[in-house]
Each structure stands twice: as C-alpha cells, then as structure tokens.
Amino acid sequence: MPRFFAQSAPENGVFVISGDDARHIALSLRSAVGDTVSVCFDGASFECSLSSIAPTRVEAHVVREVCERRELPFEVTLFAANPKAGKLDLVVQKATELGASVIVPFLSERCVSRPDADSAGKRRRRLEKIALESAMQSCREVVPKIEDTVSFADAVKSAVRADIALFAYEEERCGVQMRAAVADRLKSARTVSVMTGPEGGFSPDEARLASDAGMTVCGLGRRTLRCETAPLYMLSALGYEAEM
Image (cartoon, rainbow, N blue to C red):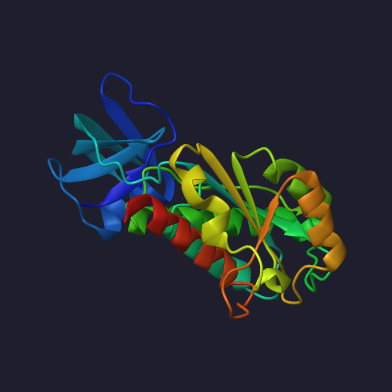
C-alpha cells in the first residue's frame, strides 16, 4: 500500500495531500477515487480511501487508524561528523531505514568537508527529501528530523541529555564495547544518542571531552569502520537488541 506523510491533521476525517506527493498519486501511480493508501501523521498510521484526486491536491478519507508499531521503543538521535562528498546522503537514507528519529551533522577536529553557510540551507533541504523518501520506502511512521550542522561542543552538550549517550571511538576497540555499554539499560531507556566521527576519527582530546561530559566512550568491535559505516552499525546493533 503506498505510504505518504501528511503535514497537518485531518479535517472532518480527511487528509489533504499536496506538492510532489499529490503529483505522484495523480500522475505516477495513476490512482483512482476509492484506491487505498496509508497516511502517517504525528507518529500514527491511517488507512485512507482517496476521495478526490488532482495533481495539486489529493483528499484521503480516513477509514481506520492502524496500529503498526514500526518505530523503535526509544528515540535515537544520531550525531554524525560531517563526511566528504555525498556520504552524508547515504547515512541519512540508511539511518532513516534503521529507525533514527533525529539526525544531527556536526563538525569535529578532523572533518575534511566544512560546508559554508550559503550551501547549508540547500543541503538540509536535500537531506530532508532523502529522509522523507526513505521513510516512505521503509514504512516508517515518522520522518527523522534533520538538524543544522553544529559544533562538536554543541553536539556533545545535546547528546549527553539522552538516557544513554554513546560515543564511538576506534581506540576503544580493546576496552568497553557497545553491547556492554548498553546492557540492561536499553530496556528502560526512552532516549538514546550515538555519536560517530569523521574520516580521520576522533582526536584523543575529543574522546576525553566527551567522556568528561558524561558520554559512554565505547568501541565497535575489532575492526575499524568507515565513517559512513559506523553510524549504521550502531543503529543496527540497537535495533537488534531492542527488536530481535
């Protein structure tokens, strides 16, 4: 069943879908009145019947609310160091599939790519579109929020507010590992934050600052992962512990 995300609550039991989604329903899917779609709003899913179709506006009448429980039992905020080229596009796409609720790019000491202010808005809009399309494809009930790029210090300050705050550090491969770091704490956690580094990894000073701030510095096994692999590894591990 095609899935879409509404921008506002239904009025008199009817969702209004516009923009690219309306064009997709009317022109690409060639939908007809009476066809069924899934519409998500505010973390809930609804089975809807199309009652009016035009390329600029589609109306979907709510048939029933569907309890799907597709989201992780805790909210995960991913803090990903800004990578080179289009790697962040991949991270956002896959992190959405794996259940991230919020994605925050940040600049650390060894980040090679440092986008300027002029391109920041355009990049954020592109990432929001990637997150939306990935959420639709993976049948998410919410679309992850994409935050503006922040400094390392601000990222740490935000990350430590979570019930569990994990800082992935490759030099910790022989010390505390991720699974030991979460252990039984994951059962009662409502919020989890994970922070991963850039191509050159975190510096020792950054790891020390994160630890001093209250984050749990942990390794991700015996192998060194690429900067675009580490966040997906951590999200996959969290999903496994919570759902399998």
